[in-house]
Length: 286
Length: 288
Image (tube, rainbow over all chains, first blue to last red; front, side):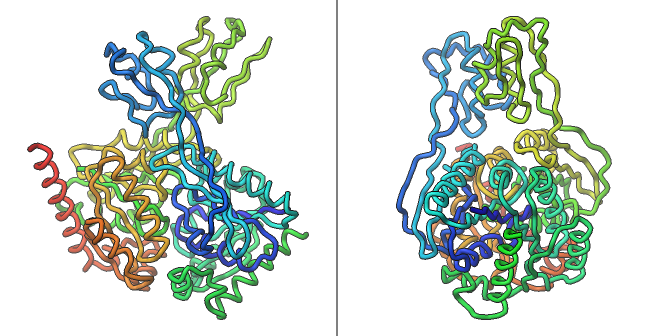
């Protein structure tokens, strides 16, 4: 079983549209959406939920008003500035429990935190493991690790060849959770200065965690000068460019209809997506 | 006044809006731009400035003085992140797991734990043609952006109009960036992905009690459902930017919209005036 994770650094470069195509093109796969706070893959795959589970993670401090003597010690010692006016601001509390340990009146207890849900769903392309982090919750990295784990278990149990994950933007905890231990990372970039800057950083993360990377330049024709700059940067780094995808509004048209573009239009875009997937699978067979 | 620029979905144009808003206002008032997208900060590309100074962002991690340690295990017991483990004759610290809460050092009965800074990122400062600029940059391989974001926000200059560029998504870094704002601009595109993430972003700002308005970017692609949603939820659409290859080209070269197409300056000034009205109206209501 091989795991392909699609990342980008910069958001909105086309990760989900590409993963949607891979869902339609790969024969034997489990799909994972590692965007747990702003998921979109389901909008292309139209899943029917098979299992729904609660995600409990971390704790949040809670001050008992009646016991609190307003001494202010918790406020003074909290490094996350989560206590103001003798109440805990849930979104800032990192659940360390320090306040509950030092409160002289024992007025602070730690409460288990239900941080979201995760799901296993059926789609016409196979199983999809996805999640929904609660509003303003933390620990997205843990939830990402969980959905990936479930997808791999499912793939192993059913003898499935590929786990394909739609990764989050950025380089922080959910990205690290999506990436570590994957067989290959496909980095989707665009020929803008922001795209290039962010590609360099996410590639460094791949190096840091020793995951081999391939690059795909999406909308490569918006600025061919920048495209050449990406090509020469990748050449210098010894990173293979796995595909060039032109700007084409049919990708958005397909999205509006809730379809991966390879199922919506048989055009140049579809062929580029097929070639991209073939190249990735070939690189994994080496 | 603090205005944060967020989106839910990535790549909708937060950086475009934040930088053009700052550049449009700078001749009339003091403007400070804070780039809180510390995982992938891009504003500096469009503001084109020289970083004049920087500070390291450290989180305090424990350092155990084993001469004093009795291996009682109290530190490991209080650590919520399993960042410290005590064995019969040794203590192991896992700095990458440590959130720097300080519980272990404070609660050690032998005072055997001190704290040392571990660098996880930097805050950088610059000044460019009337804009005071601060950005955070998380070091590659570090998982936790929030301490860097907190550090950037500490530099907010309350005598200025502060514009905060936020990372995509709706989880902890986003909440950390937008909380305390007087207004949150949500930049979206009129597509199913844009709408789905806009709905999540609206829920997040509502949870924080911050008034919001929408900027629709690349109007003309996709469908009309974002506008329908905004109308139904009574969320003002404050600016619409059309799908225009010239705008995409400027962006790709790292040129801000108002510099490349100065006719947009007026739109951003009006956007600011609308935000000011909404914020003033709200504070009048709150006083009543």
